[in-house]
Length: 52
Image 1 (cartoon, rainbow, N blue to C red):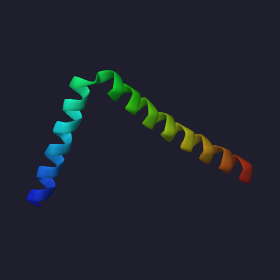
Image 2 (image 1 turned 90 degrees about the vertical axis):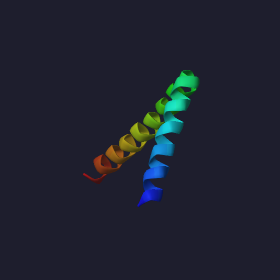
Image 3 (image 1 turned 90 degrees about the horizontal axis):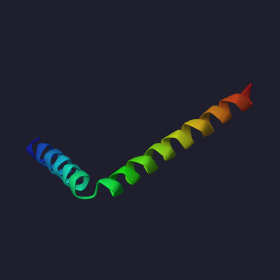
Image 4 (image 1 turned 120 degrees about the vertical axis):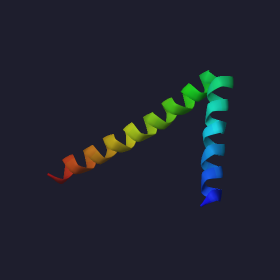
């Protein structure tokens, strides 16, 4: 249980550090992740449209 909390706080600290030191790169990473999610959602929508 303690290990999980330590890992969570370490991850949060890393993300905060990354955001403050390299905001442009952080924005690019978020944009890339969102593009991936939206692409997957579009593919699912096309798949279900093709079923009907």
